[in-house]
Image (cartoon, rainbow, N blue to C red; front, side):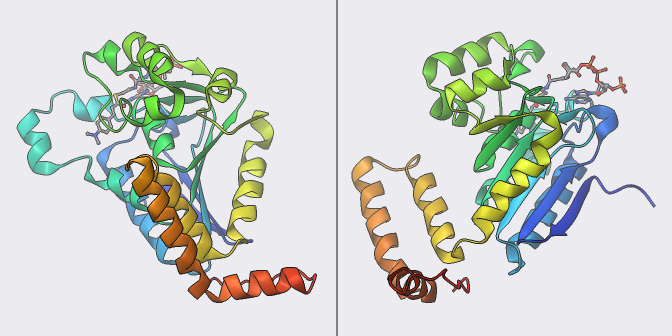
Length: 258
Ligand code: DAK
């Protein structure tokens, strides 16, 4: 039987681990891999035991981009009709937080995939970039939209117009990644972060993610209104009652995710 293109594991502490698994081509993201990734993300999203997902690469990269071989001869009509990229939507639509643990190359669609996740933790050896310009195209999965929102216009322009990657340290200075760690502890650190999120009250985590993402889609006044409604809504959850009661009784809360 062929190796799965995405390895999925359910770990202790409510964490789902997904590993891109085409190491021989630096995890180039072909249609089959992205379809499998989307299916596994949806399964984990529906699994009540999982509170947070971690996505990482296998071998010497996170992902060196969409599969150039597969894409090179496509026509615009081929792409419009077969929608080879439609699976990508499942990643940013996932309602549970996803942490991208990035090592080695995260280029083109690889960086765009990481940016669709909610937090990026990078290994010191990570190289993050949008090299599409060198292929005669531009980023197509959010590189011209999510990248400037994360790092600002000047740095995004430089990265997209030159195609040159940046180091993990530079990505940290720019706010693209939240933490830089030694490559040998990347998984451990990402899992630690994921467990810390997974143990939090699930409904509040969901609302917090939705509210932060709304900040990128709405004017401030609308975002603030959304946040306030979400805040009020959480008073309907059992976990809000438990969280505040536990604080007053000076004991750890026992959250149920409801
Ligand atoms: N696609 C296919 N194969 C790739 C690949 C890629 N993106 N990147 C690497 N590989 C393959 C290489 O061809 C090689 O295979 P063999 O020759 O051994 O069979 C193997 O991986 C190892 O790569 P190298 O031999 O090149 O390794 P090096 O260490 O010398 O170089 C590198 C590593 C990452 C610098 C180099 O491989 C490289 O420049 N790779 C291409 C990076 C790139 O240009 N990425 C952007 C691709 S365009 C969209 C969604 C997504 C996208 C667009 C639209 N929509 C939702 C509409 C995304 C587009 C892209 O990502």
